[in-house]
Amino acid sequence: MSTTRPRPAVPPRAVPVGRATVDAARWPDVAAPPRSSAARTALTAAVLRRSLDRLPLRVRFAGGAPAGKGGPLLDVRDPAAFHGRIGSQGLVGFGESYMAGEWDSPDLVAVLTVLAGHADRLIPGPMQRLRGLWAPRRPDAQRNTPGGSRDNISRHYDLSNELFGLFLDATLSYSSAVFRGFPAHRDLLAAAQQRKIDRLLDLAEVREGSTVLEIGTGWGELAIRAAARGARVTSVTLSREQRDLARERVAAAGLADRVTVELRDYREVRGRYDAVVSVEMIEAVGVEFWPAYFRTLDARLAPGGRVALQAITMPHARMLAARSTFTWISKYIFPGGQIPSTEAIERTVGEHTGLALAHRDAFGPHYAETLRLWRERFTERADEVDALGFDATFRRMWTFYLAYSEAGFRSGYLDVQQYAFTKEAAR
Image 1 (cartoon, rainbow, N blue to C red):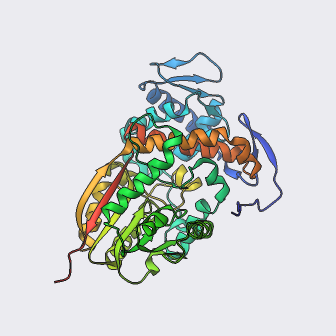
Image 2: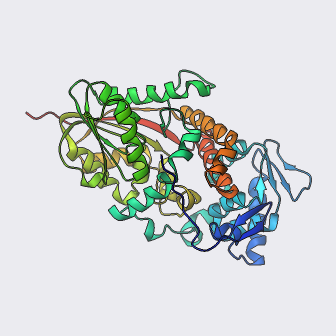
Image 3: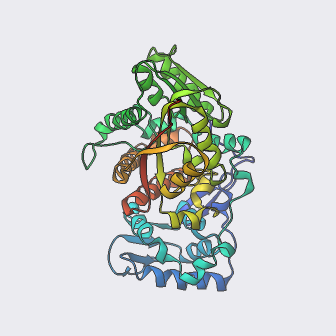
């Protein structure tokens, strides 16, 4: 395995921010928060306090006594910086404030679950209707053109194979598992990931002699399990790190004659396949390119074949509100990403392909448990993350990302689906 990480363009300069020390070269917007006028900061503070007072939270400002209706504690250590960041950058500022140590919680997931569950009540109605005026817009640089997609994917998946190996299970599966029961035990995570993969392969009817296209390789587990059934697999990814390690794993499994892993954009694939499988790839495609993605699935599927798709989803109204907004997740974790709704998926398939929906089921609670196990392992192995060269600000960022995602599923704001689509056999 190799380790690659973004390097500062100039020598690092550590500056104290909140309760943390931040490398100003690597994290400029965390080290130097955007300016916010006193009036705007005061207005933000008033709006936030009014909103938070209605939630099942306890909020403590600058070490004072907690106030609120009860529930998990949101501890705001630097109120001026906290309100200033949110006032100027919205939810991007909320996440950056956590990265800077300006707020924290003894139960981060619980706080974020409350906030996610009441997201439509945090911003007053009049301000929500004016979202287009105050919310940051997605930069054009994050558009998922063929070149843009390579950059966007690389920024996340090429961080380091070793980093992902520290918190994922032995299958290196980076998507929701399917458990037999809750609470899930970490020793059963690998089996639960294999169960998820087998369900997808069953939905796609992958068997001896099948030809399979996988769009979004991950680190090779699905391709390996499909090949073990006797299928021949072509798997494509835009991550060099994933491609290289997936090839190693395929060879170690003795399946190199059945699996080809290519560094290729999904739009560049040619040929027809009995089955097309894509696991949590659509979230990286971008709204603009959803039609092209589903047309590709249709074009690459042979008549009589089946598509199996796993996708994170969100409510349609919230998707519409957020689809052009520049979020903390798109800035720091998944540039160019957008989570669809089930309505968006099914409408796009219906309008742009000849595919027919054959199956859909949701299992959001399983993703919450998957993320809990990842987060706990990441936290326990913080010293090893540090040894790979990822600093304290990165570790707070990644903790926030995993907790934020877990909270989305626990609150019901997010869900995850497995789909099967069919294509009519040639007459």
